[in-house]
Image 1 (cartoon, rainbow, N blue to C red):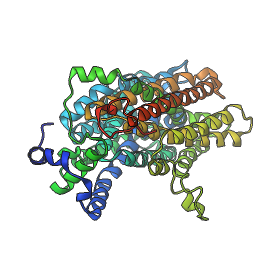
Image 2: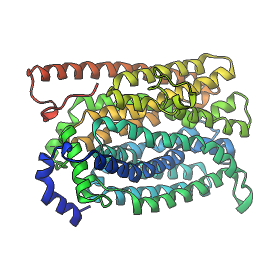
Image 3: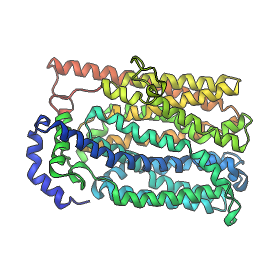
Image 4: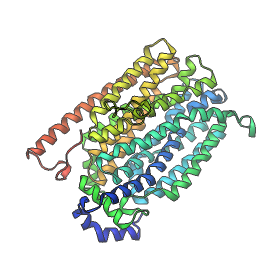
Length: 492
């Protein structure tokens, strides 16, 4: 989208000021009120958008248990895996092009279009007569959801300083987990609408959730914030403050122009691919749980109602636990307070990413091992909850880890697209390794998920060692400024 008159004015009058401005020149009261205004404008809407994306992406598992498998004959061969997997092909291929379009059209227009269109695809899934048409609608869903997560990560990273990012990412991500946790319960309620309107219960799930998504898309088109340099809700002074904070933190408040040479240079940075594989590894168990937890619970002997209702607690447990670490050493006796905060807060507070991600990954390993090998249904269910805690906490952790160690808008655009693309690859991987023939224990899928967690730990160790070494050499003056930015040091 072409810059607005306000944006051009900000650039013309304030570009040099942003490069020279010191955040100390602004009052703490102004900084707090500005951040609060940005938080209230950005985070609730981002959380709502990503919540409906997650629900629309994985509600086939709920619909399958609610009768879709029988009506569309998804029990034949690997039809369900194909339906679940096809979504990720366009989702993977369109990540980078979508991020390039994002900057040209603007966040409000592009994300609004995407949300409305995938809502229409979701609505269409409620009227498919065969599994082939369901597959087509799932592919369209992947086309329009492709640009969402990299766009949200990109937008957040342009508004905040590096060590404010993970808490904000965790806020909208955990909002999606919390709302997604109620998706099976909501799905069960929608299933009870049948046979009204001549539709089966699983069809009502798609129809109602599709309509809700379209409405949220219209809200997005009206209220979604643009990038800081082109925003429409802050005053000129507040805009200068936001840009000055980012400029002081990492020196890339002013967007740079993408060129072919820059694109190739960014893609040649091996750390971007390391982050991408780390997100893949973290996302595999999260997707597996989203797609298969109702089915796994059904395999434990639970009937339709119980398998859907019991699908919610693993996600809600994850929300409670993901924010539950930083007060462990504090003198608070109230468990409610301890569980109100967590990994994202301690990571931003201590400015450490890798150790927290490692701890979360170990939790995931323990949970997956318990679910895979325990013979007690209660223990297996606890394992699902524990693995969901670790995996769901690791995803925003990896995204923040990568965002903290990237400088410039063009590299941020490329890195977020590449990294989130591999999150889509994780969806393909998860839907194919949890095969129908492995029902009911899905041991091959559990082993694959465990292997991913060990790979994540290896990649985390490699990047941490590299960054520690580069930071030391830069401080000793043996190499030039890191990422071409004087005073910049990698976050470990």
